Length: 158
Image 1 (cartoon, rainbow, N blue to C red):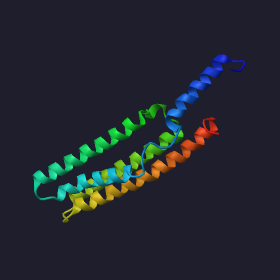
Image 2 (image 1 turned 135 degrees about the vertical axis):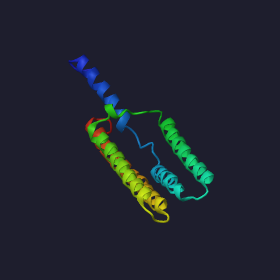
Image 3 (image 1 turned 120 degrees about the vertical axis):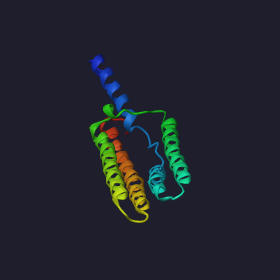
């Protein structure tokens, strides 16, 4: 400890809080976002299935699978980081990804519901799958890179 034990304790607490968001390798496997993207896109595309019971069951299976995947990833990491406590440089990445995904989802669904085109929901589902699958994967890599920089700046990594 230095000359100011209270300041040293606060600094250590801040470092431990930061470590929640930046320490260690990513707990999100590379396949996670592409799979979630495919499931989300499949949920939307299921609206083109003419057999309604099959479409509803398919959509429900996909939604429950997304929930199970998220639960597995959160359970594996044993950490549930809060957006409010996340450093702004990391929070901005997460918020930008979900904002873009929400806009693409809204625009795609609006188009699909208004289109009088065969397979409109399938096309919208493909757009959503690519947005979530590819965009999530890219956002996760950017997050990991920025997290390493923050960890190094805070002295959490040599």
